[in-house]
Image (cartoon, rainbow, N blue to C red; front, side):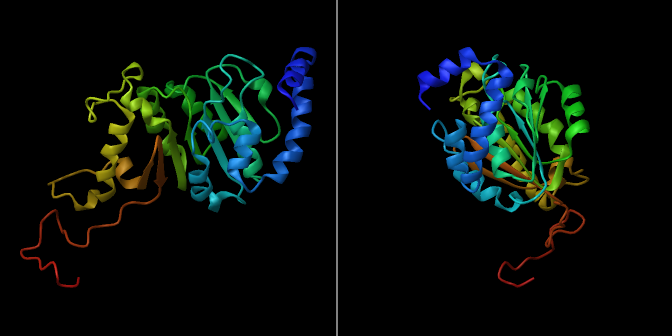
Length: 267
């Protein structure tokens, strides 16, 4: 369908009629592209391919969830203030996860974009009470994706408050972390360890994966220490895997190094 024809129908049809046309067209193409996230992103107009190059990473990381009855939450629906624009990624996820429930969060009213297996909540991703309410109604989640405001403080607040609502074996994803280097989003390209940036925050969690190896008397492991299995960094993209990370050290006992340690000796 040409761009001119699309604009003609948008002017002539009501919101409900536009959604009915979309539903019919999406059902046909969505089925044919259901196994290829990049094709789905292109068809639905998601910037996860083209503007960004995220879909190949998602294809690999999410393959074990594809046939499962998952709950997926994405922060950020898109389309700015428009009630009828946006939702491209939600529809992409719906067609890829054919047995999944897809939930979205946006600061603007996007309820007109809801459809079967897609539910959208209106609210601020930095509002802790709002996040708790969404988790109570729709969680726990198997996948959470932050494609929201991209403000560093918002990214950190959302992660701290939503990660506990992620199931063990689940994945939390943060997109567009380039804002860690942009001053107008609260980042810095001069100080790569600036407090308060998303990248600095997530880099600080890497050591926690090995928290059982700390030689610190009376160290109390944190929730994130004990529940982050791994972190994977790509260009502007982070995957955080959740699971039991309470495996004890093979070398330390009572926070003391052994009296002698032969690195070549098998333990």
